[in-house]
Length: 349
Length: 282
Image 1: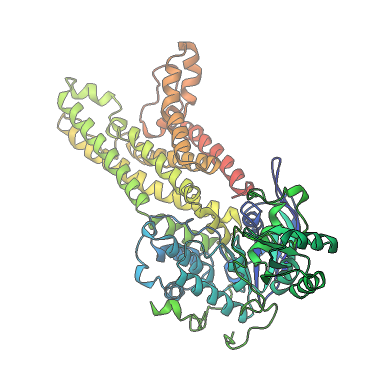
Image 2: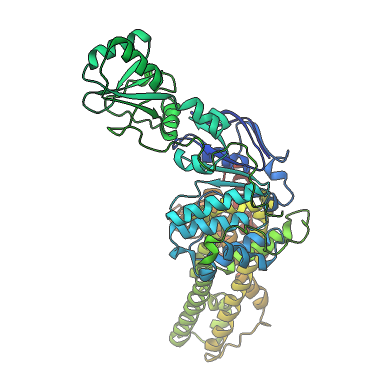
């Protein structure tokens, strides 16, 4: 278990982590999500004792990282895949890590095999692709059979096959009862990987809940409606207190704050002709962007989007350019089932 | 690449680890640092370069001087031919600076230091393990340089009728001192490197302290030079690989007093490096 308690990290005038508290539980994958610059990597470095917190604490199984007697057996971490000396072979990179706490040499060969790097074990790492470097980083993290894994953007640079590989690996490890904290700035990746989400924006906690709850709470429903009597419809919608937003398509708008049946009944009551009535589910990506837009350091505003100041509360549906129902709709997707014990493979641990 | 897709096994099937040893200690840190330093070619090449350059320059210099001197054997015997035989150390010290610097700054250049410190978060263990490894390697290489230079040098001077050997007056101490001096240069750079975390900056500071300072002092008034000269790192440290202890201006330290002053520079740098390494965010 990882406990982050009221953690603060300031660099001069910049506050990278701002009174962050959350707990990472064993047996599930916790996605650590936030836009670039949200403080994810800093938080991970604080958990690993690499940086000193300005205040607050981060504990591993109740202890500060520095007090772990044999840290690699407790925590495996992948921070930056490229943070290896390019002149050293993959084998020797893992060997010097293993030697710090008496992990047998055989184990080095075995984790290299596990991640598929056996054929290049004796090659210097400067020739490695980013994907191979990520695999080496995973091997280092798994070296001493840790109960806790902390992985910073592990899918970066991996090909689709590699992404599936690491996703399955993390799920299997979580099923064995390990604690897994994995960061990403990609909501869709987290939606299919994580069970639980910790969302940060500008160093502050934005959400800490199961993935399914996150989707239900933040991807508000919306309805695309097409009508030749659009102006009359708009007025009727406004009377009801629902919101119209441009759909990016001629003759159609997106109405939020209601459901397709409600909107259909309204149209029928007023005798309005509808040419299309399509329920929209905001993708998780959009929900995430909505949640972090106001706090995101590098928030971009698309043309036509409202000013952040009067941006409505999370839940408003803002369709991406001319593509209704784009993106991933996650509820019920395999892997998104929150907190469910993962059956099937009881890794026998 | 069947291992890539076959993830159902996860970690089962891997060697069961021995029961947790309880503590990642200093012994493990030493083994780890030894592996680090021997497993990159840059270290090996730097040390090979130190030996080739130092011994090469010593050999060329002594061959040239011995074959062109017009001094008699008696006159030559009054000179510090022991120190002269190890002349290549003047350049060798710069390569040792590179070695000492790289031993720590390469971890920052690659970001690898964060991997190292997650494996061993007790930073003093890492620092002192590195320090021990660097000290021992630089000592061995330094002694190879000084002994090889001297033994080759004696051969050239023998042709001029000067009989030099390790049993000559002060020779053994000076030759051992030559290796110690080189070791000190590596330690100075290691300390500076830990404080600065930057390879080029560290090498610049090392070269400045060992070379440039002497040049600057040369432009000062003589009376100042007399006071300052002997404290300069290269001059103080130079006494330990000399058999005669008079400076060009003023008086010089004795062999070991000079070496103590020289090592003080290294110790100050090492303490500064220790503080930064222990306290600053990695």
